Length: 216
Image 1 (cartoon, rainbow, N blue to C red):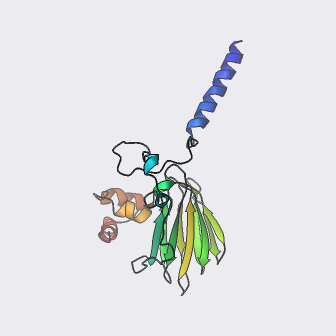
Image 2: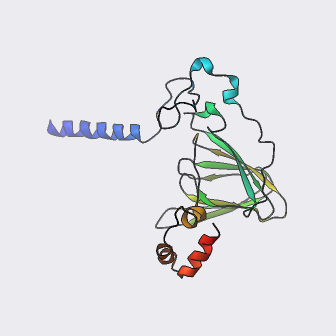
Image 3: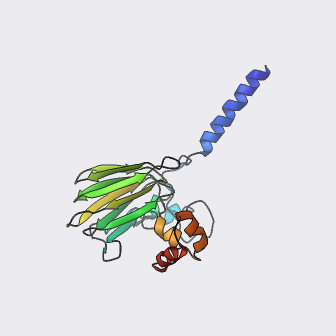
């Protein structure tokens, strides 16, 4: 009898664990974000249904190229819950990414989303790195019409190795996927991470760390 109760309790524990390990299912058709609400929730509180309009589900502008005249030579135009309030609780967003010749979307992670990238024009060299201890690098050259997946939370990048502009469209499995650019986070934090720490982490002299931090 005791073993039966133990089995049932173990099964219940697994069920509860699984229930809390993913986003909850929707309990209504939608929950348009009320960005003026002072209620603190994980995401946004729901807008009054009587105040919802069709514009809450609409965005225009992805036909326009982003400004790639920056150090990296790339531009990301995001369409997430910040741009479309109706995405709140729906667990999806997208972005247009433009790359100038030799432009780079530098190594970064999305802490809350898997990304699936489609090449609309041109070619890209892309890749991601697995977690410790393997840190295995997966890379591929993508051409127009190709699709590539970057698993959630893994460092990844895209590089335009050619002389023509490239356009890609990324879909992400979160209304607010977040982005952490590795170089910015490590060398451009506010305040700076101690150069003693970074010098030891990267096994270089402190003056090299200081030189890199000065770029940020």
